[in-house]
Every structure is written in structure tokens, then in C-alpha cells.
Amino acid sequence: MAFQPIVNFGDQQVWGYETLVRGLENQSAAYILDQIDGTRVHSFDQIIRSKAIRLAHSLHFNEFLSINFLPNAVYKPENCIRSTLAVCDELGFDKKRIMFEVTEAEKITDHAHLKSIFTEYKKHQFLTAIDDFGAGYSGLNLLAEWQPDIIKLDMNLIRGIDENKTKQLIVKSIIDVCNGLGIQVIAEGVETKQELAPLVDFGVTLFQGYYFARPLFEGLPEVPAETYLL
Image (cartoon, rainbow, N blue to C red; front, top):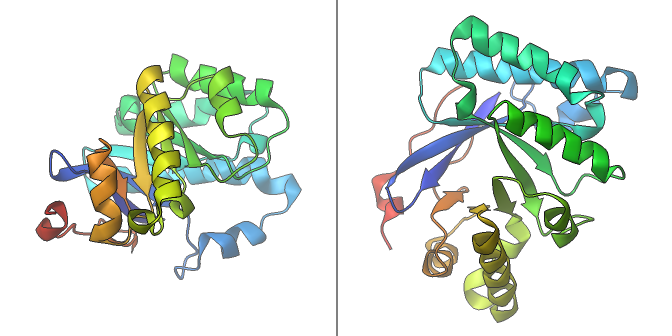
């Protein structure tokens, strides 16, 4: 696994770390996922969750741990969550520190199933998030059916937002909706101070991207102090 920080710009500190699957020789997530056929998706999903928690525990940090999951690999959420809970119990890892992300870019045809997954996760006090919001198939329809704790704005909305009035209007509208629904917003894919500035003006406090730190293989990258200055 590699770890990339999610920072709280207002508090000038790391809020959490997203775990990103890697190969044993640091191969990309895309490379690894290409090796997984349909019959092994469920077991792979379970292994990755346990690996992420165990590695996070070994790194001794107290911030949130964000884990991507494959919703189409979850058959019955109440059964699939058992292995995650067992690892937390074994290590003494606070489950309230775990956030599960599902990417909006993955085509999900059974929204009722996805809703049942998030309902079960919330029951166990996990945080829930939609990743790549604004890039996928459902958009605001997902929020009309159920509300996660967090949405992560897709990086394509963030790229060059400082020079694109249309993107600014779209992002501001999404933020307004989320504020009304009590959903936190993470702006991911921030690469420059120029992209950061309008998002701070819009009231976003949580950020992720190369501007703050690149993912580090099996370690926690440092966030330079100057990245908190505008």
C-alpha cells in the first residue's frame, strides 16, 4: 500500500491518509487491478481492507484511514464487514477512524445494494465517502437517494479551476448542496497554489493532491509547512 495525506487546511495539519493499493515492487493500482479476474474480486477486496488496517497500525498514526472498496465485490455487507471488524478488534484499531470510499466512476447498476452497504457501514460507525464525485454515472442522483459523510470532488473539476469560471460555478454549487445536506467536501487532485486559492475561498477545508504530498510506498509522506500558506 501507498499512503497519501488528506490535510485540513484550516487547522494546518493532516486529517487522514488514503491507502492506495500497490504491487510488491510499487506497481500502480491499475496494474494490480488488471490482474484480478471476476472470481477473485471479493477475496481481493477483503484482503486489501485487512492489509490497509494492519499497515496503518504498524505506522502508528492517529488520523483517519481512508480505504477504497469495490461495491460490486460486496455480496452481503453484514457478512463482508466481519473480517474488517475482526482486524480492528485484534489490533485495537478504532473503527471510527476508518472511512470507506466508493468511486462514482465505477458503474453501479444496483443503487439499492450500494445503499445497503453504506447503511451497514454507518451502523458500525465507519465514515462513508463518494470518491471522484462529478466524474461518473450518477452524480447528484446518488445524493438524492442517500447521503455519505463525505464527497471527494473529482480532480478534473479541480484542474485549472482558478482560470475556469464554469468549473468554479459547478464546484460552488456542489459545495452549497453538500453544506445543506451536512456533507463534508474534500477537494482532491490539487496540484498548485493557484488551484487551492478559490477552493479555500469557497469554504473547503479538506484537501488532497500532489501540491501537499505525493503517495509514499508503505510510509507516511511529509507535508511541507509552506503548503498551508496562501
